[in-house]
Each structure stands twice: as structure tokens, then as C-alpha cells.
Length: 209
Ligand SMILES: O=P(O)(O)OC[C@H]1O[C@H](OP(=O)(O)OP(=O)(O)O)[C@H](O)[C@@H]1O
Ligand SMILES: O=c1cc[nH]c(=O)[nH]1
Ligand SMILES: [Mg+2]
View 1 (tube, rainbow, N blue to C red):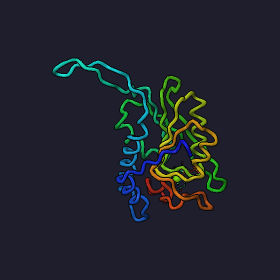
View 2: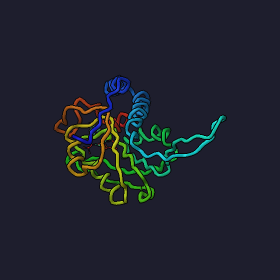
View 3: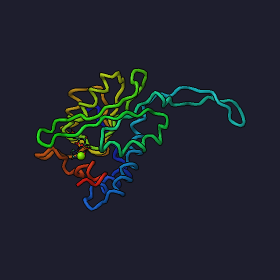
View 4: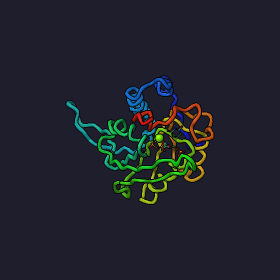
């Protein structure tokens, strides 16, 4: 798992524990997902390019650094990835946002795509693909394939919880994609849910069950 980066800061561990608790309601769940995404994004953006710029302080000219966030693309996998977008946009306010709608067929666990709207990726420097849950990895692999076909160069997958099965699936198909996560959980159950996990992220965000 050489491309896996586990960001297990105490703040993240504390907030994720509250999210895992089945008694945590949707309001708090949404807030915590936003907060953890912000902290994960701090690490996931560590290697983005900066350009040198010249500015003037009140005292003298100096060299500074700027991020060309107009060249950065953020893509949530609907639905659950939507809960991460606003947070990363606070750090990269000029990033373009694409959307890929995918749900897992509950029996086959294969991804079913129902929506795709992406900005021009040919000029982008990096694409952050967002989904809180990386379980079998089939949804992530499907989305990454679309992004690559549309010209995405560097792809960074940002998730809250990853299963070993999902990490290996992404690595097998796309060894160049880096995965940032708050936790590498134990395994999947017979229905493809992550253990211990936090249940169905989309349902908990939007109270659909
Ligand atoms: O790694 P995988 O096995 O593909 O599973 C992960 C996917 O499952 C969940 O979506 P879900 O199908 O529940 O759709 P939703 O976000 O609309 O609830 C989750 O948000 C991921 O997209
Ligand atoms: O545990 C899981 C697996 C897939 N999708 C989820 O929302 N949770
Ligand atoms: Mg769901």
C-alpha cells in the first residue's frame, strides 16, 4: 500500500470516532465530515505546485508563493462525496468542481453511473476525487477511469475510511493514484460494508434510512 497516506492526527481520530457512533445524528455527522475533510485536505494538498510571485509588503519588495487553484479540479462522487466539497473549496476557492454520480448495486456491488459533468481537465494540474468511503474500490476505480479518459493528470483520492480491499483495488488498477484517508479499517463484511466503518455514509448524511 505504498500510495496510501493515513492522516491519523488526534483531532481527526477524535472527530471520526464521533462519526462512527451510531447515535450521532445527521447535523453533527455533516459538520464533522466537513471538519475532517478540511484537515485531510491540508495533508492531501501538501505536494501541489506553487509559483513564485513578487509582492510588496509595507516595507519592501519580497518574493512569495501562490497556488494556481484555477488549475485544480475537485470531483465528488455523489452522493456522499458532496459532503466534502464545500470544505475543500474553502482552501481552494477557485478550483473547478466536477460531479460524478455513482451508486453501488447492492447485490453485485458493481458501480452504476447515473451522472457525469466535468470541467475541462486537459489544463488541470491535479484532480482531488472525494468520497468518504472506499470499500470494494469499484466506485473509485470507475470514477478514476473516467477522469483519466477525460485527461486528468495527477489524481488524489481523498476518503474518510478505507478498507484494505479498496486500497488494493485502486493500487492494482492505478498505481499512480495517491489515497489519503483518516483510517484504514479492518475489512469488508459479506455485503461490502466496511468494518468497523460508520455504516452507509450517504444515508447518514441525508437521513435516507
Ligand atoms: O468502494 P465501493 O464498494 O464501490 O463502495 C463505496 C461507495 O459506496 C457508497 O456510495 P453508495 O453506493 O452508497 O451511494 P450513495 O453515496 O448515493 O449513498 C460510497 O459513498 C462510495 O461511493
Ligand atoms: O461501509 C460502507 C461501504 C460502502 N459505502 C458506505 O457508505 N459504507
Ligand atoms: Mg450510500
